[in-house]
Amino acid sequence: MSEVAMTSRDYAPPRSYPREYSDVGPTARPRPELPAKDRARVAGVAVATMLAFAAITALVAFVLLPATEIRRMTVTGAVTIDPSELSAWSGLPARAHWFSVDCAAIEASIAAHPRVAGVSVERRFPDSLVATVVERVPVAVVYAKGQSGRTEAHCVDGQGFVFAPASAYAGAAALPVLSGLEIRGLRYGLRLEGACLDLMASLEALGETDPALVSAISEFRLVSRDGMPAELLVYPARYLVPVRMRPVLNAGLLKSMMLVLDVVDGEGLSPSIRELDLRTDTFVYRTKEAVSG
Image (tube, rainbow, N blue to C red; front, side, top):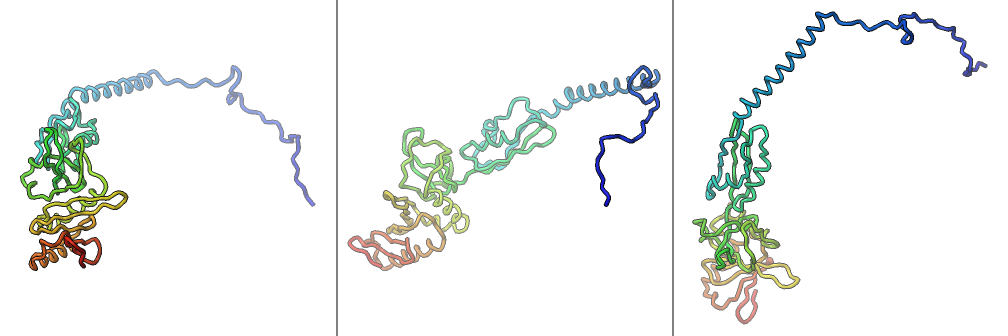
């Protein structure tokens, strides 16, 4: 049986190396030097490179940078807001340049305007910006004390933001009123909370698909009791009977409501009915003395 074991003795014969490869002692071979002609060529290339870099730097500093200084910002999409007002809100720094201007910061500044729902800012070479704005659209009005101290109507959009006086929008007088709220210290840009958000979102969607139904409503009143979910009282424009329902609107439910109200009104029952209840699948009307179904 064969075995292989390590040994501590080195049986390899000694090696000798040429003296020119030795890195010790006075016999080490010196590094060859470039000829004077080559050294001059290398130095010339280095000088030419530095001069070219300096020329490019001067070109950027004295020609390109002045040519790319932002001189104008165009605002598109603004309907009720003056473009100069949005330019003032943009916070565009003085002597900003196309290469370095912070578009995201400008977008954030313009988006802080209460009437702006969205904005995007783009560079246009060599010296301009384009801001595309989407304005808030009112879907209802709410009454609260404004800066004048008087109770006035204010616009609310589909996201629940109170953003402008109703007097600034010609069609605001035809919008339904949102009531049942107490707003203290009103400031534009304030967002409503709770059941208002779902209600405003559904009202906006309904206005896009069936605006005739929205125009048939005079007022939405949110009512709530301690510990109970919020409910909605709907006051139709053409009928005397209010309707109680959940605080989310849909076209099918409102159409059914209108049919029932039309029957009630046609039968001459409106004076005796206190409210119609549509919170469940069964329509219930409450008279001024009893409850019927």
